[in-house]
Length: 110
Length: 110
DNA sequence: AAATATTATCGTAATATTGCGATATTAAAT
DNA sequence: ATTTAATATCGCAATATTACGATAATATTT
Image 1: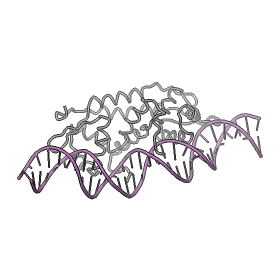
Image 2: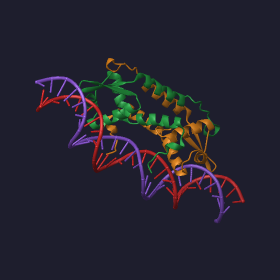
Image 3: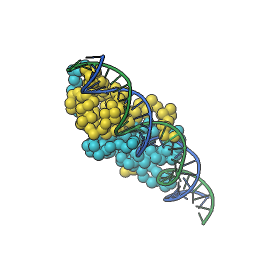
Image 4: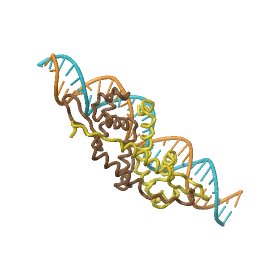
């Protein structure tokens, strides 16, 4: 197997999980932090900054682009990647909806 | 390979990624939602509720226990799983620190 | 103690992810 | 047009994850 059974879950559950999953790798967290701090970046900066091969960085960037959290604009022979601020805030909002569900503490565990 | 190079990232990056990763599966999102709504649960309820085998549910519960977001108390022959509200709020807080970094929108992307 | 019920663990197959070298693609510079 | 630079894609090997049947472990019930 190794195949997630997406069809048995709700759209919301699949959606949340897919967002969490993309953020669930330290390289992608590092890339986001770097882009945020530098305002923008090109892939080669990241290759120098992180210790990963260019092909690997490019692959991680692609996954971040897939969920729309970053966008790339071609600038001459390089690409300028930026956070999509609207989506950034939207993802945070979706996470907060999940976390703000009221947790009722049950007697059996306290 | 297939081996994440954790040693090249900061503790914060690894920590955040590991939390996101655990939440990055729809079954685990579903389990958390179910426990929150039912106040508590035992594994067998989840087997009926979700369409996954008992062994699979047990494995997902273990991962959730590993990050401390749920805890299990033995109750006779079953186990009562509850959200650890303190950790639940702490994880949310850690995520918000990440998301609340100020994003400077760069001219090249707008 | 034997039977039953619930959960955990083991072993294994299928699929996914990570990482990287090699190579393509694209655009600027010469 | 050729060279150079930056990024993307392909193909592959190593490792991780997902899922589940079988079985073990634990605790209650009979």
